[in-house]
Image (cartoon, rainbow, N blue to C red):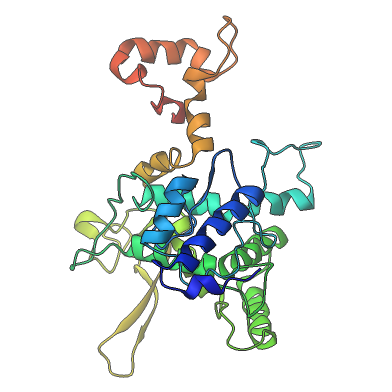
Amino acid sequence: MDKSWMDHARHTKTYIEGVKQFIQFAFTNSARGSKILCPCKICVNCAWKESSVVYEHLVCDGFLEGYKKWLYHGEGPLCLPQRCETVKFQNDEVEDEDIFEVLDEIPEMLEDIGHEFGEVGDGGGNDGDLREDGSDPNIEAFHQLLDDAGQQLYPGCTSFSKLHFVVRLLHTKFLGGWSDKSFNILLELLNKAFPGDSPLPKNFHEAKKMIKCLGLGYVNIHACENDCILFRKQYANADQCPICKTSRWKSEKKSLDGKRVHQVPRKVLRYFPIKKRLQRLFISKKSATDARWHDEGRIRDGLVRHPADSPAWKHFDVTHPKFAEDSRNMSISA
């Protein structure tokens, strides 16, 4: 298919006719109902829009830079077929092909994360930690993730984007129980084998950093090796436990200039803040429906089919009626 029109000025007749042809092609091959993913510079294949909106965006803002292979609109295996709403399991085991069917929902995942950061539609923004200049590192990481989702793995590759391939690698590492060292060896081999300048991360640390904004962060809190205290609040700057006198550090190394010290704690507690985890339940349409099911979807026939049918739950609802009247209440998390 001739795509030379994509390089023309957006006000020209050639470009406008090309946009119409693209929309017709996309609706034939990748539509969900009356919508397709909008590939403009603003939506970057993360928002489902109707044809009139996609047309307006592509004429006013133009295509996402480098999006010459329409992977999300019918060209190549990354297109979005009409999927079932649920994944079927047999004998409580997922077949190998089903594992990667679930993994291949990269556009839906990016759309959900985009809503969390307020980058798609009417999202409410992100209230994470800001830098001194007011910028949000999570949003910057999300934009980089979008770039990775649109970057070819190597020139001419139609099977994977950079993001898609790294997610597959990390998932395979988890399924196979690979060590970090073996994963680093594999990445080193792949970087040498790929033609040209490989876009793959150099090691496991870079791979994790690449998809950091997809996950949920945690707070490292140093702890006494004998579980006496946590080194926080009044003990945040202490170098040893005030109770058992055990050193906080397992090792200390000074840099050559003597100004920096690398200290390794003996024990670390990883605290997972609850707020972000509750918010994450509602960024996906599927998980949001599941989170409200206890109020909107369960069968109410007097039998105990769910913890919400128990006397304890009912007592809580009576005690806190304002909280209980909203189906998004998170008493289920208790």
